[in-house]
Length: 146
Image (tube, rainbow, N blue to C red; front, side):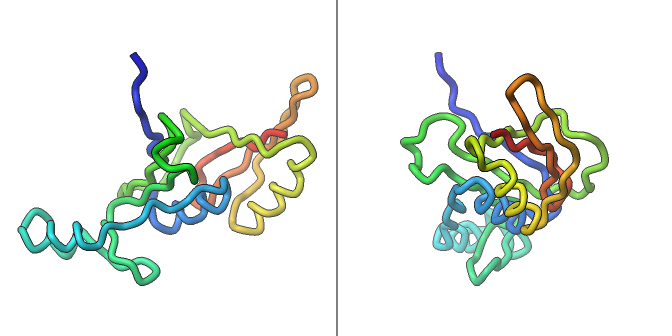
C-alpha cells in the first residue's frame, strides 16, 4: 500500500519561510481559500485571531504550504507545510531535505540562495558526489547536491 505524505517544517514565520522555500526549489505557494476562511470564522469554527493578511491575502495564521508545480498529479510528497511553533530552532535537524541542483549548478545555486538569506554551513564530498549544507533564513539545514 502506498501512502500519501507531506513534509512539515516548524517555523517562526511560516508564510515568509514558505515563500523563501518556494523560490528556492521552484515550487508554488499553495493558494489561500479566502472564502472558506471567512466561512469558518463566520460559523464560529475559527476566530479572526486564527487568520492574518500576508501580502494582501487572507491566510490561516498557523501555516503555509508549498506545492509541486504539477499540482496533485505530482504524487505523494508533493507538498511541504510550514507550521508556526512558539520556540526557535535550537539544535541540528534530525531530518533535512536534499535538493539536487544539477551538474555544474552548485555554486550558482549556493550564491542565489545565500543572497536570499541562506547561510553556508559546510561542504562535503564522497567520491564524485559533492554537496553544500546550508541553513534557510530560520536556521533549518538542507543540502545542495550537484
